Length: 263
Image (cartoon, rainbow, N blue to C red; front, side, top):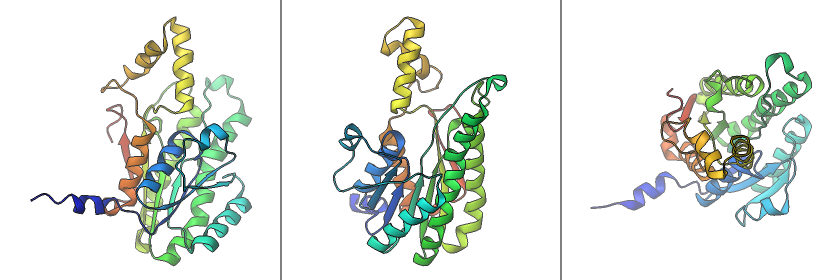
């Protein structure tokens, strides 16, 4: 006899309060929508929200502006969330940017900005979320890393270094916080159809003298499955890690790379 209700319960996040950083677009938007669909109260944070981005976000998701690199601002926003909803027990550290260049051409200020947002921002948000999770006796932290954390791609110095650090912090925090019933894992996707990726496809198509489909094929052919990920898939995996199925792992880096990286 089929029991679909049992599987539905595995993904039920009702009663949980989730914060997603960098949620205005891309992976963060996919994660915010998925967590909300799974029943969580979702607070989507970003440095700013534009009208066209908000239209893609599900009604009912709360939006708050927050710069992950400013510790006092993060502390204040988290305190506001807890004051309003009583707790904060899911954190998705998604905010991130990319900058690529050859080592001898690196602009150190831009390198540092990548580190500030991708790495230090993750540290700041985790630092100020964990006490609330400990108080609740339950917590889930999902860090967004990348397949580039495990590759040695030319020009990816800043981005890969930041994501490799996030992946290793995931291992450390997974061990450190498990005794408090706080599980920490990272999603490591390959190319995802974010606005940034769409721009890259357009530029590559122009460079190759082909159409958008040809630009897509250029990147897809780098992957064994010959396809790029959609932001909804990243959201689905975040739900898995925050739900009952996620109880089976902590300190793990989950490869969602269409075969590009086997961990």
